[in-house]
Image (cartoon, rainbow, N blue to C red):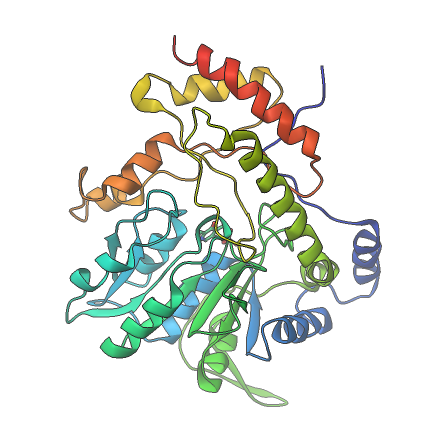
Length: 374
Ligand SMILES: *Cc1c(COP(=O)(O)O)cnc(C)c1O
């Protein structure tokens, strides 16, 4: 019996672990010089744009909405398929998430349906680069420009992704990245806000730390009450160890994804996700199961687990959660998101995997699909 293969696993090298020990011994372990160093490195990575790091992407997205002045009475366009944080942050600032369906294979917001969802209350569009495949940003940015809207990208899956040779985060309005343990680059927990104006960046600094603004050596002002979402130096130090390896780790992900496509190109029972091009950073490999021909997803996951393979689900359609049904959303409104929500499975894909691990997953799907039909 071979080792259990999880659907993902973080990759932290020994030098990074040693650097964490150095920070722990330094006497300064929360936000300090390592945070400034990581922000400078990320700014370089994103072509010189303003970058501030935070405790996680959920806080980054919520603070980005706040600095854009979005609140009660406002509407924000979000795809119906994402991790629920994408919609939750909109609701948490008091605005209404307005869902739009996604492409069945791209999983990204269907731009052709966005315009019909705009009202006089719409303030922003929040595209998600699902699984690391860039959304149609040019069309979204152009529509936003025409209608006077902000674009806040949920780029949690897209660290290192690029669109037509331009890195996600290096252009556009505001992009928020996640450095959660499962994401392509990790600080254990962490996030970043990229872009925005100088005054918006100053607001990010206040909002991630109680709303404080330092006035002098011995005085500060509280401009608006806020919570706390700063990143500790221990975490920033992990990010500094990850960033130089990101391109290499993402190209490993791409090779593994290519192997899945090669194995299934001849035809398989699964519906494969859109393949994109070299700009896809393959955060997730998530095909659809043939649920309509009788395959039970929970049984499939159990059958794969019995063969030592971890399978995830990313994600259920957000509008069908109780919290969003309570806002008036219902079944049948976003058929692609609903179908993906029912059929999607995330198969193992992380940089330490080998091509033969992919083959093992592919081989296990055949009997697992059989068992899951009974
Ligand atoms: C992970 C994730 C988030 C939240 O990131 P955290 O850093 O865990 O707060 C937001 N949106 C999407 C699409 C995600 O996958």
